[in-house]
Image (tube, rainbow, N blue to C red; front, side, top):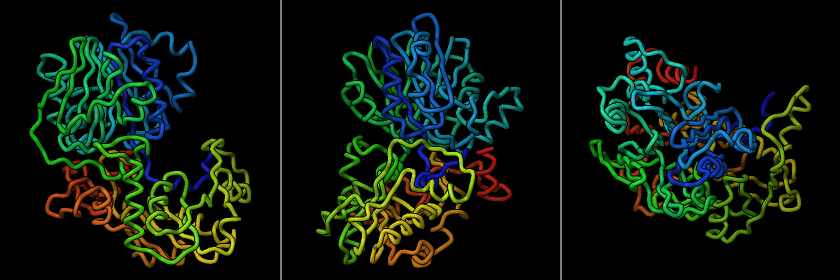
Length: 484
């Protein structure tokens, strides 16, 4: 079973999504709904841990939320008014049931569930130390390191153990955890990954994005702040600041691609930001054309902004079929080639004889862009100009986004003009780093202290890469071991 759709294959993969609620009837059902809204953040597996006051119920499975949490037989054992959940795309560890989150363990203080969005950059180093101390790992995911650090902590409450564990880790993390009488949410000190707080009546809710609050009718309260730990109990919401303050470096790619366009991220509408990025892209790299066409679906808001700024008509020149699964049996090369059209087809009437500007969010390996340009040419486009609403992706991400090693990134190997020739377009342009920051409301990128994590564009990594630095084989070896 192989993916036929290069549009999916050549995207940076989502990280993960987390959700938790305390004090609500049928909490697990609400978590399942929240995970549905976060499905775009991970489609490989899903899991829920619930607590009914006496017992924990756990169900974890490979596949999407709707495939696993739609039957009464699955939901019935997930009783109680407290639950947490997770959707996963693997950035560390293989795709196997043992790596599906939330992880669950029995501690001296009772059961404990943990869901993690992000990547720990010293997980392998810590894991080796823990194994030497006698810890037995059941998974290959970096999240389990936190569990063992808590187990080997010097005692104390759940919060004490968690703080002691997290003070030893490096990397990017948003965590939602559950013990029998509380749910805990944490963001790393630089706030790389998102986490928000909401309220459903009197029940507090934690989620990766506000769209997950919307689906259950909860009100958005605020973002959890970088380095903040919130503890949800029957008494209310307690805020703790257990870590040394750091400069915030929120992931800028959340605005470009990962977050759902109907979410609020760090106080800003994702849809509005993407339109602004498209407008700045038009200001920087306009070319005469007849029609603006988005690459569906993630290129749509930026293409609308580009069209409004350039006063060129916007049309859906590529139509996506939303009723096709991710995989398809490919018995021959001919069928494999036809499989490209399973999800996307050119809307020829708006392309033939036209000068086309295609707007997409990124170029990773370049295979998607090649196919799109070929599709436009085959539909009779007179000219095909590619515009990208992010700067060139030249570096790998180690903070929760699954990117290829940089030698496989087209922008690392080729100049923009060489990339243009490779994908076969008449012209190619990316938004500049300053243009991207201006679209987010800043005067530009502060090179001395960047406002966001943009390491995939600049190579400026804000968090130490302990597992990578000084290791033989460099980045390729690092990524290979983390994905083994």
